[in-house]
Length: 185
Image 1 (cartoon, helix red, strand yellow):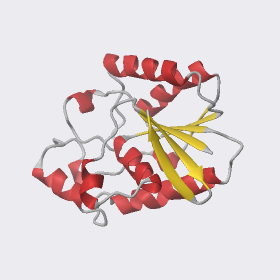
Image 2: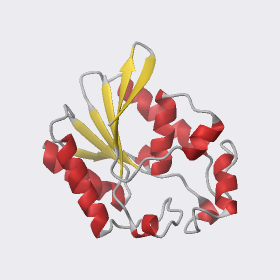
Image 3: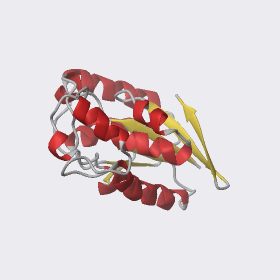
């Protein structure tokens, strides 16, 4: 069974290099263009369902794909971005954020940890594994895309720290008899 995953289009906070978790920011004009291009690129894929984060930037990106694929979009709360707590809105290059990001089991100050996020995302991925007659496109956020990647591909802590999806980049993952493999587009 195949699974496709994309990150939402660019937001103003992405352009400003700000940490953006649960703040509900909109797509920029470039983000809209990225979403349109992504939708064109997946138009021929065998996707039967789209699940997206409830945040506006992901919903708008998913809507582009839904129109191109002519399939419904469902909001999936487990795909919401990580809660970065007090670091929300700060510079992504700040030492405080980078140190917290390296601590996979420690929660961001007043937020959640990568492991907290993995618990909810992995439960969704296990449910999807049991639906082999459907092919999903998940529209999420960089932190969540990173977690999805770890479900299919082992990463060291340093690889996890540096792994990133570009805005509207699409990756294809495949479930195979208990082994998950990765293909990137």
